[in-house]
Length: 215
Image 1 (cartoon, rainbow, N blue to C red):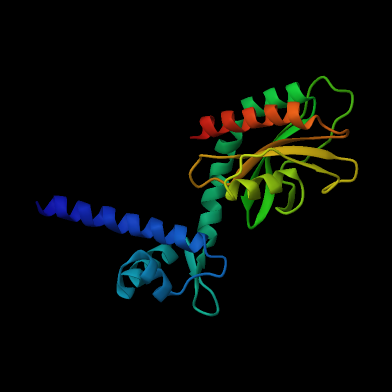
Image 2: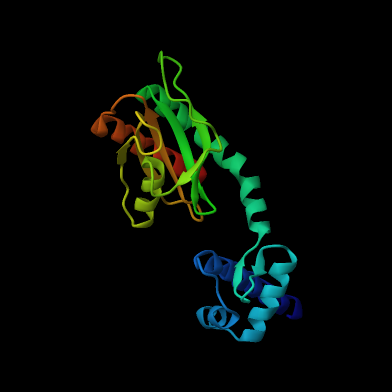
């Protein structure tokens, strides 16, 4: 009975710690201990214990004003997971690049920006956009970032843009929905205007395939 009780307490503590991480991640300005306690429905002393453990592992930190913010340990875990995300997305990206005749990419959110996590170029075109893995851009500019913002609002897309990140480049993208903890989009970029309807359907299919592969 004692072992069972301790196991239940450990599971509850883990659940609270994970919920605290999610709360802090969703608070751009950070959280105070009091705010965290109120949202978790627990006492301040319990939050301090959680913060102590998570800070020791680099998952949380306190800023100059004492507010709770995500720590560098979260970024380390995210970077370790990125190769797995890219590997799971590659089959759908290859198919999309060949279908659309355009450079396909998976973009994820990191540090408030969009980052190209995986890029696949078509094999049969004479010319196509060279899009570097690791390229960063504001979410408000370009189809990839705007698709992520649309996904936050519950819209499936697709989103089309022209010349926002690079003059003469055209993009179509859609959010990857239904994967817990992941904010991402899949899209294509080309040197000529894209058929919004036809390519849009291909991008949506790729987004659905990637969501299934990563779920």
